[in-house]
Amino acid sequence: MVRNDMENDNELIKKYQKGDQLAFEKIVRNHLSDTIGFFFTITRDKMVAEDLAQDVFFKLYKSLKKFRFQSSFSTFLYRVNLNTANTWFTRNKWKDLLRLDQAPDRGERDTTVEDEWYRRELWDEIGKLPNKQRSVVMMRIAEELSYKEISDITGMTEGTAKVNYHHALKTLKKRVKDA
Image (cartoon, rainbow, N blue to C red; front, side, top):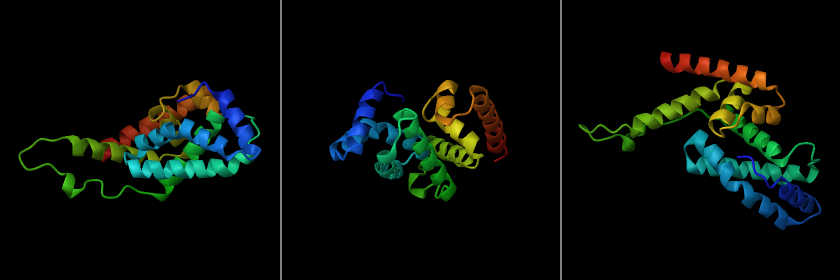
């Protein structure tokens, strides 16, 4: 979600760069729920999403001291989120996709476990995409960003973003169908 309080973020960053720790805490408060939401959409696990958000804000704590305002803070934050998500995808493979304690009793038709398994399988396949495709898919699906917004964040053209998204969907459809 792109916020309209960019000036406020810039003011807070400038204060933080001058040593005001409360300014950083305000930045965290302003963006924490969106950051957790981004990671929850991908992981479907609140604890993992919170851990990844914590990683993002730790990275911001270190990097904002040198932030030069060459891009908007929201663009910078998206890049940190994407890099963190890409690192997580690279390091982690889905484990225990279907937990026995979540399986429905015999005779019941409960699709929640199947739906969750499919969502996780899909995100696992997204994690296997090349970085550019994976980043575009995450921004389109998890953040519902337009190609223009993706272009602004990644530096690729809108056409390149569309092509990466198209190729990613084609690959995902084939992989999920073949599974």
